[in-house]
Length: 157
Image 1 (spheres, rainbow, N blue to C red):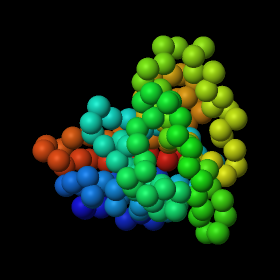
Image 2 (cartoon, rainbow, N blue to C red):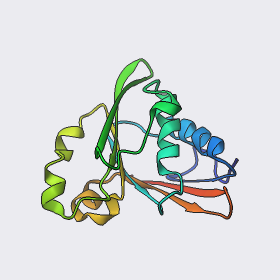
Image 3 (spheres, helix red, strand yellow):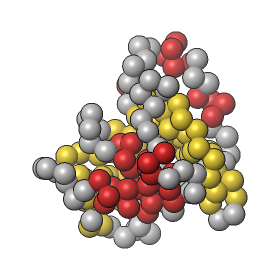
């Protein structure tokens, strides 16, 4: 795993991973950068490691073990209770790939999830204008050949 920019530098962080274990490790590192409340879009093709990254974030927050975190493809939302600096943190992992439009999205109650102690990570959120408007940043994952991945985290000021 290489980190092209130190975590303290700027609002864009780039990482290159060589394996799923590396991606989980980057997720653990990212958990330290994400201060609630946050709504982040997880962008990447199928199989690039979006859920794998969430495994590391959940692990770092003591919200779940990596093997307990699964894709919410059919359930749409997974909720985990964790902590950061002794304070409770809610981690919501959403997958809106199967939703057809804003009307279906409204039934998820996204606004109710965005509490002051929440980190909301939305796979395929770029599909929806309302999510793009509310997002405080984006995590883009792309294949860098084989099991390697490029992970770019952009946080809005």
